[in-house]
Image (tube, rainbow, N blue to C red; front, side, top):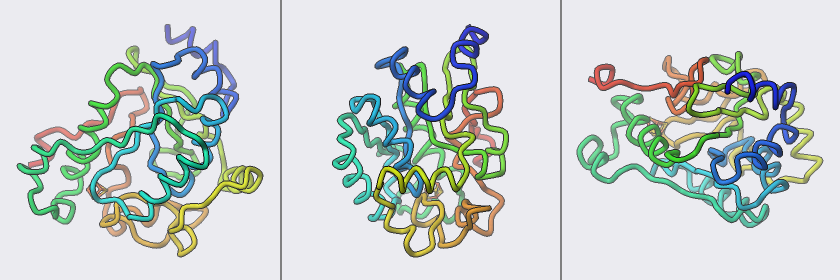
Length: 236
Ligand code: SF4
């Protein structure tokens, strides 16, 4: 199967990759979007192929209100009809983060209950997961490929090879609205307690978990296509 998938979609990226994937996998494909600084590009491509494609948004309970507002505006503007806002399990929050300050003590555990667990649950039944990560963001993203396969699920990154300039040009060409926080210096936008102004076109994620070694929330995939897991042991 792996070889066949790679041959079928060899050399494709951007909408050229997205379109056949949505056509071939239909309701078994989901897009994961943060509705962040560059999300409009992938969401616009999806809307041009099939507005009813399932789109999963992790509503961690710690988002900027501007992100929630931008999400609503983009949904309307692009005509997306199946955006699923998923939330952490209330029992996990009650037992692990009753006062909402876990992020200040243990980023990994907070991301685990607010992002990883809800996302894993939401992705059950989907064979293809699409996200909008890019190699130019650096770190472990530097080695992204448009497709990875773990035997059970295909992970697609149609924008893997896009540069900051490509994103800018696409936004301008399609007159896409910008996340309001980009106007005041946010290059990458996640949860409010863990995002600060800053970053640059060369290092757009510098404002995420600034001052710590953490660079990813743990909902993405290793090079062999498996979800990165935070184990219970690491969390103690
Ligand atoms: S980014 Fe911060 S607030 Fe959001 S889930 Fe992770 S640790 Fe918690």
